[in-house]
Amino acid sequence: MYLFKQKIAIISDIHGNSLALEAVLSDISRRGINTIFNLGDSLYGPLDPLGTFKLLMEHEHDITHIMGNCDRMIVDSSDDDSSSTINYVKRNLTTEALDWLQQPPSSLIIDDIFLCHGTPNSDEVYLLEEMKKEGATLKSSKDIINALEDVKQDVVLCGHSHIPRTLYLPNGKLVINPGSVGLPAYIDNLPIPHKMESGSPHANYTIIEKKSANWLVDQISVPYHWEKAAAMAEINQRQDWADALRMGRF
Image (cartoon, rainbow, N blue to C red; front, side):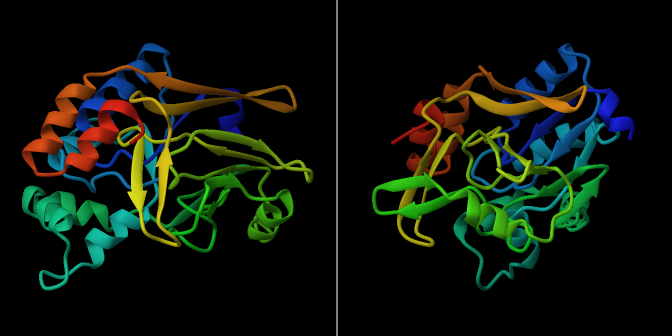
């Protein structure tokens, strides 16, 4: 139970934003934290996938990774059916980086903590949010408990929605989404057309620490040079990413 004696930093959804990742890793280091869990979607995006990979490798002894849906999309894609963004990522990554991307598991158990990207059974489904025409709303406690019925651990870490959340369930489980390091808002068409908006351009991550029988949860928002990141997106003809990076909303 060594994890219960130290602070743990949780990062997720970097999406190739090396500038945001650099700021977050610097903040984590400044706080003296050397245990980091990464919940996936690390390199996908029209920004700096190779620079992001190199930063992660500089901290490879500190970070435990799982795979996200966009990581899997890069790994599974062929040259014939890839999107322009996946093609951009693959063109800019080395063979070493592409090989690394295939290694992490889709979920992981560490002590009393369960790590997944979306839900335990799908990296494409939101664990905490349901999509309606009005936007994202919290699922009922019953629905979340049902999604976690096979999870025995008391702490569940998830990403995918890019929205920082801390949720305590009636059965005593604690569910934490650290938000997104590198993409604070996005538009998607599945399961229905919707926006996810954190409302701020800051890079997000979370610190957890066991205090007696409970967990202290600290949701952190880190400033960085998001205008420079937005300019990267514009160079690659992704104005939607640029708008999201500048404002955290559309």
